[in-house]
Length: 160
Image: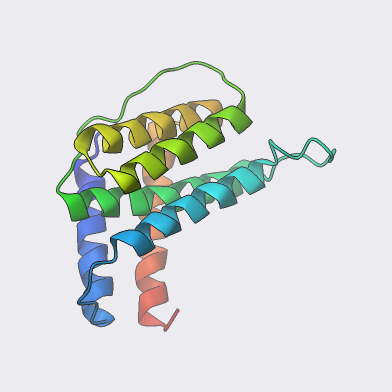
């Protein structure tokens, strides 16, 4: 998946939010925690870890919206640190979702502790695997990101 357009859209959204909210301090930790929370919200909607329950996962549109919520913060954190991910790629193999969520959280925590390009790319690789395991393709992710980006602008304009 080509990422340049998404990075540009996120850069503009970040500038809009930070300008309208008059953010003058480093929000790396806040965005990092937001990413961890969004990952957890996605895991919760998949219900993959809820061995005690027979209720299934939320519908695909709900999962996709939660998935792209994370993408916003991943892009934003990369922009803050001057990192990119030109082509989003990774392994196409089916794995246990619970294990994948735990590994993804570990990778994010590594990035927070040591924000390097290599750690940043590892986050994207894990999210690629999540996308594959959740049956999301590049077009669906891009479309959902664009829709959520527009929704985020509207939220900012209406005092969200």
